[in-house]
Length: 137
Image 1 (cartoon, rainbow, N blue to C red):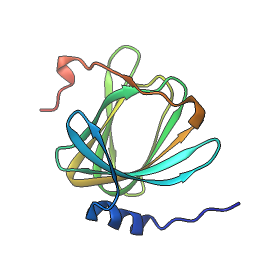
Image 2 (image 1 turned 120 degrees about the horizontal axis):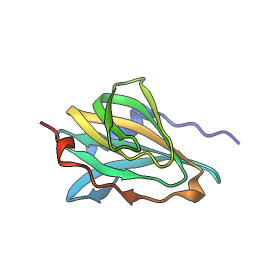
Image 3 (image 1 turned 30 degrees about the vertical axis):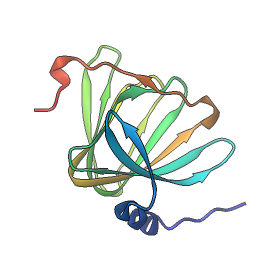
Image 4 (image 1 turned 90 degrees about the horizontal axis):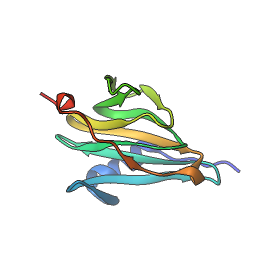
């Protein structure tokens, strides 16, 4: 079976607010389901200026981020607590493996990204406390 989606049309729905929203630390983050299979899922997210998905990690899933619109930053921490920032723009891809704490933030007026996750049945979300030095300037 094949599934086809128009990401530009889904982005238009996100911008118009005609989609679901999830609350993260008092922020209303817009998203829309792109696909779901037995093994994986993908959602399109839209972060607006100043919004971010708080630092968290997953025990057993891969997060694959694909930049679709605008600019964003994905901060990833290593086992020693050091972080590395990844700039994500349209066409950029970043894979965050299980057990890697990460935070997603908007670096402009908006940041739209496609997030695929697998294996879906192993999904969990574990908060990650960042060090004081990790705060944005």
